[in-house]
Length: 209
Image 1 (cartoon, rainbow, N blue to C red):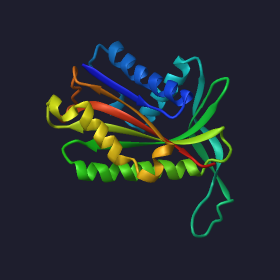
Image 2 (cartoon, rainbow, N blue to C red):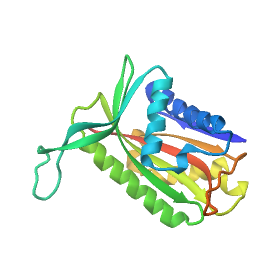
Image 3 (cartoon, helix red, strand yellow):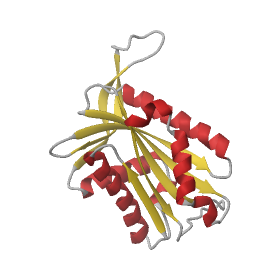
Image 4 (cartoon, rainbow, N blue to C red):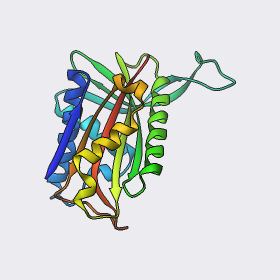
C-alpha cells in the first residue's frame, strides 16, 4: 500500500508537490520496485524535484551560479559573495528559487532525529535567506528521509509520519510551510546495512525576500 499526502498553501506549490510524489513513484516503478531515489542524498532529491517541474510542463535548472548575501560578524548583510542556487523552477505564471537540505530521520531514535531535522530546516532557511532576487518567491526545502531497522508497518503508519512532520514545524512558521510525504508500505526498501527506507517527506518553507 502506498500512502501519500500533500498540504500546500497555493496551487503552484500543490502541483509541484504532487508532481514530486509522482516522480518518486515513477522511479520506483521503472526500477521494478527494487530501488527508491530518496535514500541517496540531497543532490539526488533535488534532481527529483526538478524532474517533477519538467513533468508538469514547467522548466527547472539546478546548481546555477549567483551572488548571495554574506552574513557574519565582520560583514554587513548587504555584502555579497559568489555562490550557487540549488534549484530554480518556473512556469508561465510563477517562479521560485529553492535552497535545499537533506535530513536522515531515524525512526528508532526520535529525539535525536527531531533535533537533526530542525537543524537541517534551519540551515535550509538560512541559505534561502541569502538569495537575492532570484525569483518571485524564495523557499527552503528539507528532504526528510525516514529509516528504521525494524521491518514493521506499525512504525510507518500515516498518523505517525504526520505527527513527526508536524512536530518538526515551528509554531511561528506554520503559515509559511507546505509539505508532502510518501509512505511505501508495500515495498520496504532495504540497504546493505539492513536499514529500511519506507518514507520520504518534503517540507517547503517560504522565506522573506
